[in-house]
Length: 294
Image (cartoon, rainbow, N blue to C red; front, side):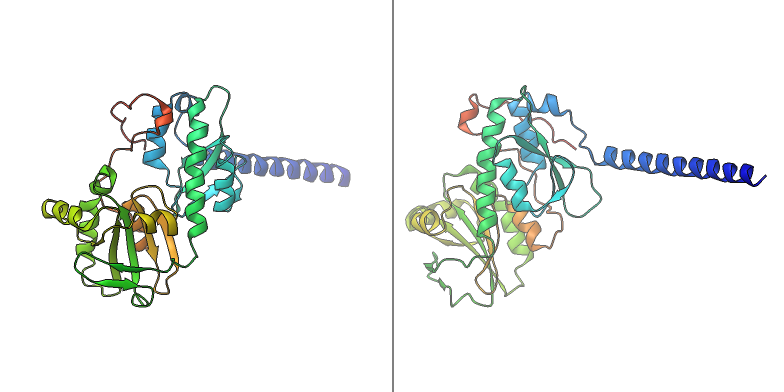
């Protein structure tokens, strides 16, 4: 009798354990399905322009994101970018309930457009460079804006500098003006913020241009050497956030990212601009961009 009871207990234990394991497995599958991106990866990577539009609309490597490797393990941002620099992976955005965006690495297969690997490699090199700038002091500066105001490392201590690099013939730079003007207006009551822009153009060129085009930042002329030599920046526009002690907090190329950072993670309300044209190495000019992926 005792033997029968023991066998019965053993069978019931096995059944309950099996049910628990099946339940865990089902939950894991459900979790993975919720995380996987709702895109056809093979289709996306076989068309360079389609991938470029997806990348421009959905991925911001200069933002603070949660990075997962190809095995879905969380890895530091620097390691994530270093893997992208190999040109063997692309990042895809995952569905996530977190406030921070989650990106996962997916390996490019042999059918992927060859331009994708080289483009993501170059893009990631820039983003890693920006990441490495964060935490460093802003180089020594002595700047005079169009109104004669002087800015130095000493005179700006205790204030946060919102810095933008640009030039008149940079379409992407000028396209951001309305969004930036709105942000300046929204924060005009704050005495702890300095909105400063470094332009490559001459004083006269800028004065003539700004007669017709409204830009609420303070504008400093003739800054090509400072931008490209001291800051070592080659892409326009570039935005830097510098804290009250002169330390670089954030570097990026989009106004919306800068605004989101300053608003402590709040979603920027600026107009969503079309993706920039792909790099010249991608050949033909792009067609009208597809609708943003959701």
